[in-house]
Length: 253
Image (cartoon, rainbow, N blue to C red; front, side):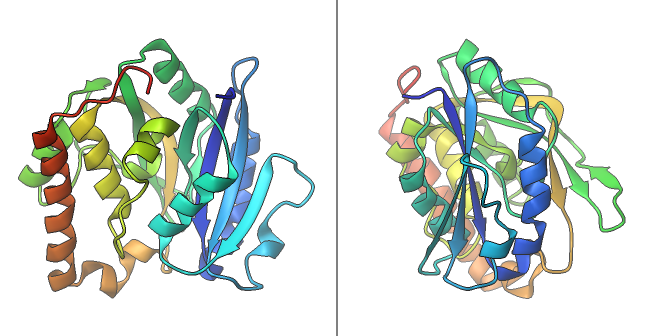
């Protein structure tokens, strides 16, 4: 497997205007010697509105389009267009902080027993200010099952943010990528990962999570009670089923 981090970004029209900022945050990353990143931007649909915002002169950037199916489908489809040992999530409207990729690599390369890494996240407000999340855990390993337990006890809120995930590619593929849900597909993946492998949380800020009017998680459909209950039920059922199978990800899968 190449010494490469594949950064996957799902995008559709309204979010495309933020892609240059996401790209700038990638260009600011400094990786260990011999490592590189490959950015795969996958449009959730086929329009003329996204391509103009994607860099065309950088060989490290791949742009693809496909039938609309939601962000989870777009990210999973993006896996076909990039080969690397690790997969990093970067939503189209978010930004990595300097050093984020190098810190993720350092953790995963040092400990083959860890399957995934998350980091501290700050909300990026419309005025440019940032706001932290209350209750960030201590830096260190996250034991198997800990995310599900916290999520159930705290109103379906995980103690770590799935938008900051960096995961071993083989483990991600073994779990089938992101869940086939209209929303919460990243939370479903996070709980599945934690059901079969230990993870890590970094207290250093690794992601600026943009808050704006067009944000998917701010739309009424995302908070519809009936749909949310169904999503949470299947996310939990998957995590518990994986736990009951007692399958554990082999070291450095």
